[in-house]
Image (tube, rainbow, N blue to C red; front, top):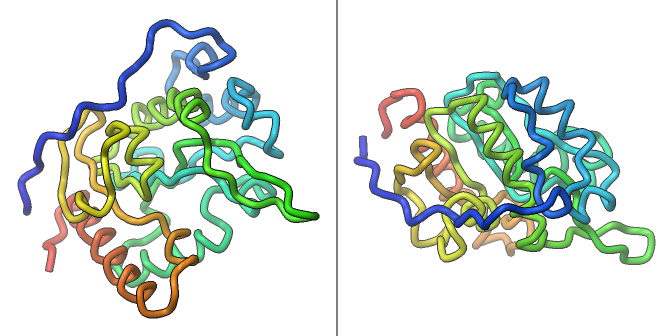
Length: 227
């Protein structure tokens, strides 16, 4: 098993903020997932809370060994109220299956719990969440991590990775490595939505890397021998 290395300094916490720019005052002291989910359903700590249809909280086993965190819910997730049920979720399902990782053993969530989007005609198109939104939502992610206490946290894409590991942390140069951080051992890989925007050949290559990264994370989490 590869030795975990020290992570870059985590994203810095700013000083005391008002309830209008952080969810921290809304997070209950009792860190059970049902309690957190109920409290988060009423969160309007950032502009995304008013924009989205509903809060999309994380789902999965209460004490999952592997914790996957993406960027934010997409259109389908916002409508259905569940994480990773849209096109990117289907891509993730395919990658998990190829990696031999049962989805029902994994906790799935996002760094941001509301859908940020722009209107294009009658369509709602994904809009990358701002630093302010990611920072405001981070207390919910930290509370989920505290409740689940996973063995391995895997960040899917740059927004998730930088939310936990600092704004300079890059995905490509840190794939295939394990980092010791405040929340335990972290790994990083592509967000499956990135693959949807690729041409066939680079998509196949990225898919193979995503599968390898998920297998690596699951093996670390469960002690399964990594081939």
